[in-house]
Length: 245
Image (cartoon, rainbow, N blue to C red; front, top):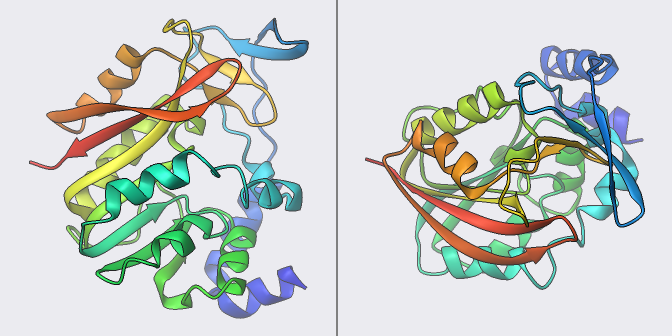
């Protein structure tokens, strides 16, 4: 049913492109096993800067269910504090099922748009009542929006899943389409050491604050760091607030 709905609401070229991405197998990579609270994880050596993303998970219905609740009591409260007094257009990058967009809809001075690489997740966002013309299927490293189209942008639990090249492109694209500022929530390692590419349910970078700051500074001159209430056994959350020039 979801596949048929996606065919109806997506242009054929976009649908076929996403289907091709979905069917691609992840590249193989050399990994070193580590153990975290009884869960065997895989850590890519830090010298490997081309670690692949695991894209197939974003077409998994179980992942869509997780996205419906995972920010409760922490990041979903925090993004409201960051956006409450703002007005204009804002972009939710990697918006998933649109849950964060729905939460922010209580602020009438904000016009929230969203984009995600997964047509399945975008379809779920449409199903929850978000306007179709405010949603796009697309790659965050090559955003389909005009320069300065948004006043603000944000991403939550997304940027750490990109390759290093992808992180750089993501941030440059975010800066290009945003006039004022953007807010990005990512995990950093509890040890504040560069632990590298972690292979768990979702693969991600679990590195130091300094490592992340270097990435943000490639795109922005003015960056501020705020603590987040989100955490797990291996990481703590940080907000990187990036101010446009």
